[in-house]
Amino acid sequence: MSEWMTTTLGESGAWLSGGTPNTSRPDYWGGDIPWISAASLKEFQVQDSDRRVTAEGVMNGTRLVPLNAILMVVRGMSLKSEFRMGITRREVAFGQDCKALIARPDIHPMFLAYAIKAKTPEILALVDEAGHGTGRLQTDRLFGVEIGIPRSLDEQAATIRLLQALDDKIAVNERIAATARQLGMALFGQASLEGDLMQVDVASVSSVLTRGIAPKYSESSDDVTVLNQKCVRDGRVNLAPARRTLSEKVKAQKLLHRNDVLVNSTGVGTLGRVARWTFDSPATVDSHITIVRFNEVRVDPVCAGFALLLAQPEIEEMGEGSTGQTELRRAQLGDMEITLPSRARQQMLRADLDALEERADRALAESQTLAALRDTLLPQLMSGRLRVKDAEKIVEDHT
Image (cartoon, rainbow, N blue to C red; front, side):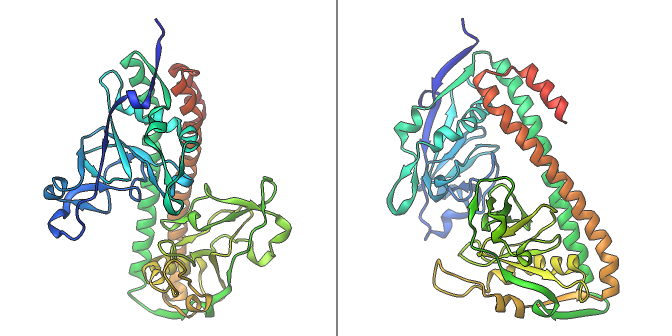
């Protein structure tokens, strides 16, 4: 008998549909049960959401699923570029743009979740369009996707342990980075409330305040990295969504310098996000992002960068224009006033801020390496082409 069996997603467990309680009923919302939507399903380990429902809400328009249910987005704009899915780590409710899958008894739920994750390219190829360009995964297509499963639950568990060890280390690194940033923000925030302070407008202490370029995209790894608004999130730069642009089309002024601050400057939902550039590799940004390069003669660029991070909520409210076409003008950003400690205090503070940021950058760099390793191993493990013992040796050699 073969050590592996083949099944389809449709046959791998029980499928459930979700829904949305009436949003005009306050007694349905604001409870303690996370309600997962296409917008909030962003993590593989599903634990919480920015929206929560009450027990009454669950009984009136949505559905509750238990721990170890697999959720996946089947309708939404995100499906045009990514397949969002994850496994619940607690009881949650979910919306109609998602489907839930409860694994059958002979399949470990976490193994099934990883198996589906490994099928991401194949699943994305099944996406078509509903109205207004919305991505859609039709049920019959999704149900037809084939996956391989070890017949032994022990072997499934061994695979899970390996993959979860990588994911757990990635999660630890992300917590280290988040804690380091929080400490840095707290240090800077406290320093901006006491002692001698200076209040300046952004333009007066900047040597460069400009939008990015209109990219001429390239597939060559020798060309310059160009960031878009998806790269600016949670106060940091994520290079994963970045592309390449022809090097000769980038003026020297618009090549990023370490400690530049990047501000998303167009669009509802993305406008106002702020991040610090802390890499040394050649890069620029597209025209939807504003580059702020502080003049080191006037202010410390690290401290000034933290001032803009602290001001993100204010910047997010500065957009002008019609719905969907909101813009943050360069002059608006330049006129914004920021509060900084005295120059002497800035110099003292910078050493602490740099140390915290470097710690975070190291942790995130290790996470990127581990994530790349995991994503390389995942399809091989999920297809049986790579045995767990061999994968363990590969992980040991790389960590």
